[in-house]
Amino acid sequence: MEGSWKGILAVLVVLAGLAASGSSYQIIEGPKNATVVEGSEAHFNCTISQGWRLIMWTLNDVVVLSVTPTEPIITNDRFTSASYEEGGNSVSEMIIHDVQLQDAGRVKCSLQNSDRDASAFLSVQVMGELRIPRGNLVVTEDKPCNVTCHASGWIPLPDISWEIGVPVSHSSYYSVPDPNDLQSAVSVLTLTPQGNGTLTCLADMKGPNAHKSVTVNLTVVHPSWGSVDKAGASLPTWAIALLAVSLSLLLILIIVLIIIFCCCCVTGQEEKESSYQSEIRKSASVKTNKETVETKVKSGSENKAYSPDEPRTTELVSPALESSESSVREQQRNRRPYQGPDHRWQGPAGPPQVSFIMASPRTVRNVTLV
Image (cartoon, rainbow, N blue to C red):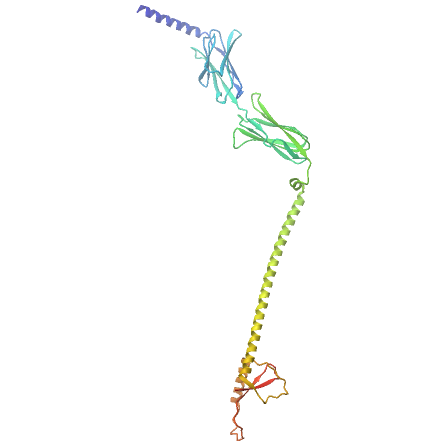
């Protein structure tokens, strides 16, 4: 029992000695902020006075490395340590290999049995792709053209510039973020080339010495009238306007001619139909007159008292005219005054005689009805 109490007192004394010795060292200078490119290395230094027993390095509040005066305690191969003396103090360096984007955050150096610590911030940049989509270019001499450069997958977005290795009469460029991708940017170069050469697109990261470039060849050709594109582009504005007006007038003229042609066709068809109907009516009239004459001839005989001196005609008046004339004679007989009895001898009564007025006013033909 007495021996156990003596062991406990010895442990307490050792702990008290460690606490007393730990209180005599401190962090003189902590790590500094660092910005690195993804895939590279990051270095952080922590300067501590003599007498330290254990240094702990944490990344985003997770212990990734522990260092003792004799050797480091490594739990992850990406985190290693280096130690050296500087002005009577100890310097502990933590090295992060193959830095990843998720490593960005707070880096802290702390001492065992001490509430003193020092921290810094790690920034990680991502260098993405840089490309000119069309590759090597063939353009027309003294004709403005655009060249586009795409930077995709960059964190943060880089500064894009151009190096022009061709003779030009004018050049300018602008860069804008891609609205569809927050990690991409587009730069457009406008130039009027006058000779062959190269164009280089440069993307520079802020902070570390990180940049990327892409180069394409530019070939200049003379304007050719054999090409539809170039021939159309070489026309002056007034010629294009005159051509447009001429085509419009030609179209209007064609429409007018089509309308006139249609009207003429319709009119000709109507005249043809009218002539055809007239011929039909004329044929019907001639046929009717012929039938009437034949009927009259068959129904009666010629009068013997017809004077042969007068010219004969075969034309007869129409039935309507005959009926009208008969009606007139009947009215005249009815209006004739009474003259008393006529005692003159009259021969035997014969068949009534009917006179027909022919189509010619000079020809009268007497026909005796049976």
